[in-house]
Each structure stands twice: as structure tokens, then as C-alpha cells.
Image (cartoon, rainbow, N blue to C red):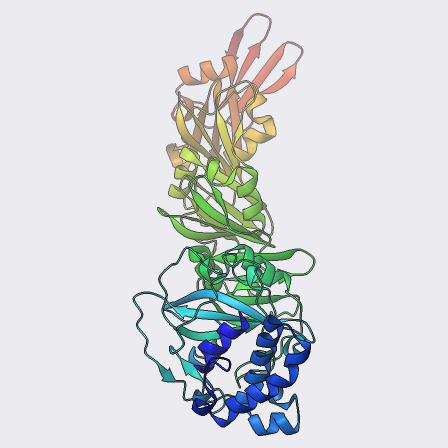
Length: 527
């Protein structure tokens, strides 16, 4: 394996070439190797010859006079036969450039770049058809070759049979099978490259970080994140770290762990300033749900599907949305990112509803026909204000309702959707709401004579006229009031709701009279 490397990297064979055809360096290799021959097997002799030769080819005289110093050579030239590092030719990125793939690797032990641990050199071979041609990189330090050496170790992406020359080399302390899950653990060692470097490479003194491990599990450069484009670095708030890739990123919060974000969700996360924004660090990898995808974060979620795009839910709105089943629930998928309301609250909009939040009310959902009517009335900026309850079923009925700061909206198949607003709604709930003797609302609030208004119920109605306020009329007294012409009749508006007037008596006061019911007989008298 090592001899093959030497041949492909230097285009010489120190064993097969005749003495007369060799350069000075090659003759030194042969003679130095012969010193080892008496004490070595043929196989060991050949290996040691190659190792010695690799150092001498770099700097023959210095190596003879000061053994080992050739290993300290950082920069390289086009004539030394080695391939340039990827960061030299790929805009500073220590990753395979477009048009190449991770094809194989070897390691160099006791590398200062990795604080004494093994350093891994990963070959990026050109894809087929090959678009690059043999040249020198032209870099002042790492002037080595690119797209010249037709060579492949082959531990990575063995499903790719066709390959071109080595475009460049990646240097990393991360084991290749973690860097790219398509690499095997079959090891090749060549310590000649232990100090090879470039101005754009820095010392990497860590063992594989959790970010490296997760990157490997996603498939590395060949996975859905693509090649790495920036090294792991601290986040702006210094609580964790992150690394960026062609199609996404991985963020690490030590107390939680590393999680990836990619694709459309990554685009939305980036638009929200990632960890510097309202969502914080990711707390899950991307996962599937209801025909789409999502990521959870410290303070919210981002949801994506083809029909609606990628949108976020944050804080209490996210909590309510997930409590109601997320995309699988009554609201469906988000159709817009969470947005502020004019008075400092927030709203998240969904396919079949919305969730509103404010500091004074908390977060509550509205959906279906009730949501449609709420929007018609101006939503949180309209007459009703913010919701103060989730949609609820009235006990013992099929009627559903939401309560709001200044009213309520009701829905069932019999009466449809209808709203109670302001003082009429407040009076209704003061009476006990759906459990009161006036029953359920049966229609929309309507305007009456002289600027008043009223709302009908199963067993009566509530009327409102300033300065009297709301008055509830129900039961037999309401039936008689209807006969009298209600607010347009001689009695006018109620000035007091139905009340107990004494033993066996109930009464209701109006602007121009009173109706009194004797409960035992059902007789009503007007005065």
C-alpha cells in the first residue's frame, strides 16, 4: 500500500529503476535502504525503503544530515508530486469541491495538527466525466498539484466505480468513517504526510466532537448536509457551537446535544438569525410528520411541507399548536411565520385556524367557522379582542364556543355561527352562560330601535340600551313580552332582568311598565 502511494505521488519506483536512470535522490534512497536490508524481511525492507524515500524526495541533503527534518516541511511545490490540500483550491474550505467525491483515505500517526492523535488525509477524486485538468495550484505555500495523480485508495464510496484524478486532499482529525459514513474503517498509514500543510489549514487539537459524529451519521459530504463549508465555531451567545455545510448546519448546546437543521427549514431558521434569533438552539433533528417535516428548537418549531412552505411557531403559540396535535390536529399546517399584532401580541396562522397570544391573555386557539367569523369581526384588533379560551363544547350539547376579551362566538349545525359582543355577552356569562335558564344563543346580535341591540337565546333574549345596560328576559315573561311587541311595543326596553319578586312571584321591569308572573298558576299581569 505504501509503495503504491509513493509511485502515484512521485512517479518513481525506487526498487525497480536501474541505477543509471535514477536521480540523485533516488540513488540515496536505494543506498540508504540497503543499510536496512540485512535485518529486514523483503516485505519490511520494501516498506522502509518507501518511507525513507518519501522524506528524501522532499529534501534529500537535509534528510541525510539531519534525519527527520524533512517531516517538518509544511509547504510543498508542484514538483514534489503530492496533491494540494482542498482549502488551497476550494476558497479556504477544507472539504471536497464540486465535481469531486470522497474516494479514500490514509492516516498519519502522532500528528501535531491533532495534538498527538492520528491525522486523516482524505482524497477527493474527480467525478466522471472529469472536468478538471492537471495543473499546479499556484499557492505561495501549498503549490502542489491538483487533478494530476490518477490514484485511489478506495475505502469510500465504493459504489462509485468511475473516478478521475485526485483533485485535492482534506486534512482532519475526525475518523473518515465518521466524517463520511460511506467510508470503511480499513486503515492505510503513511506518516510521511504527518506535517504536510497549507496556510489555510489550522491545528485541530480535538478528538471528534459531537458535531463531527453527527455529521458522519448524516452521511458526511455525501449526505443531505453536503460538504462542510466552515469549521466548528462558538455561537454568538457563547452557549454552544456550530458548523456549517452546503445545505444546512449542526448546532451543539452541551446540555442538550448536537442537532442538524437543513433544507427549507434551515433557510427559515437562517432568516430568523438561527441561535441569535427567537428560536434558540435546535433540540431535535429534522423529522417527518403528516406529510411534511419539522425541527424543534428551545423556544419553538419550524414546520415545512410542499404546499405551505416553511414557517415557524414560537413560545406559547408553539406550545398550544403542539398541544392540539400540530399538523395532524384541527389547525393543519402553518401558512405563515409567526407575526406580531399591532398592539404587541402575536399570531400564528394555519390552514384551518389561528393561535393568538398577548401578555395579558396568554395564548389561545381559534379554528373552523368560529375562526372565520372572528376574522370578519377584525380578529384581535376588532370588537372582540384576543381569545381567552380555546374552542370548547358546551356541556350536554353539540354547540361549540370560544370566549374573547369582549365577547364570544358560538357554532353548531342548527343555528350556524353567531357572536355575542360587549355588555350582552358579559350579562350572559354573569347568568351562568350555557347552563343558565335563558339557554344557548340562537342568532347574531342585531340592532334595535333607538340604537339599542339584542341577542336571541333558546328561552329568551338579552337586550341592551344605554343607560339601562343589559337586561335578560326569558321564560313565560319573555313570551308575553313578545306579544307586547318587545322593544318596539308599549313596554320599551327592559331596565332590569327577570328577578324573584316574592313568594311564588317573578317579575321584569321595563321602561314603561312591569310584567309579573305567578309561578304556581302561570298567570302574567302587566302594570
